[in-house]
Length: 274
Image (cartoon, rainbow, N blue to C red; front, side, top):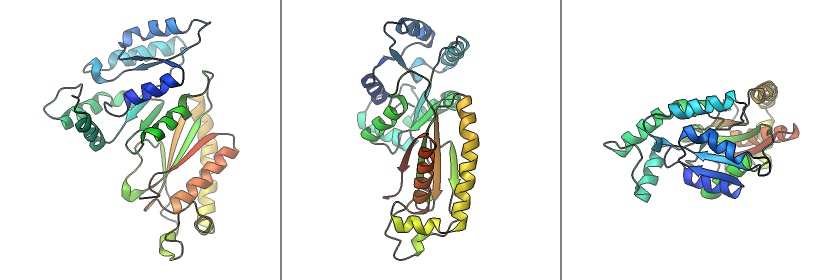
C-alpha cells in the first residue's frame, strides 16, 4: 500500500546488500534477474512495485507465475497499514496518491481492492501501523538479512488486547480470554505478563497448561507443512482483553518453546504499555 513504508524498506534492503530497483515494469523482472544472477556476482535483487503501474497488477502476477515456472525463487513482501495511518502519513508529507480519486480515502480504498489478490498470495504481509523506523528495520533484517540459501521458517508471536483490535498481519490468532484474569488480583494488576508472579499465576491453571500443550501440538503439525509449501514467515497472535497479562505470559511461553525446537522466533507485546 502506498504510504506503508515502501521507500524505507528499499533503503533497508540496500543496506543488507540487495540491488534495489524501484518501479520496474513487471515485464522486465526476468531480464533484471538474468543480469543479477551471473555466478561471480551472486547479488540479491529486490524489485519495488506498487500502484504507480496503473489500475491493475495483472502483469506482475503473470511475471511471478512465469518465474515460478522457471524455478526462480521469489519472495513477495506486502507492506500494509491501517487506512487512518495511511491518511495521516499522506497528510504529513503532502504528496499525491498514485491513484487519482475524488478523495484520499477513495484512492486508498481503490488501491486496497486493486492489491487484494497480490496480498493474498504474498509470502510475508507486514503491517507497519504500529512500527517505528527502528522496529521496522529490525523486522526486515530478521526476514532478509541471511544468505540467499533457503531459509527455515521464522515465527513471530505477538501478544495483544482485543479491545485494541486484532493484529492485521497475524496468520493464526488464539483467544486466551477463557483464562482467569490477573487484572482482578490486586497485587498482580500493576504487573505485566513478563513478570514472574503473573506468569506463575497464569500457568498455575490447568486450562493454561492444557491450552499450551494443544497449541504446541498444532504448531508441530502445521509448521513443517507450511515450510513444505514454501511459506517462510508465520505470524501468531495471542490475545486477551487488554494485552497486559494472560496473552503476554503465554506468548513468552510459546516463543521459548519454539526457540527450543530450533525455530527462529521473535516475540512482540503490542499493547503491554497501553
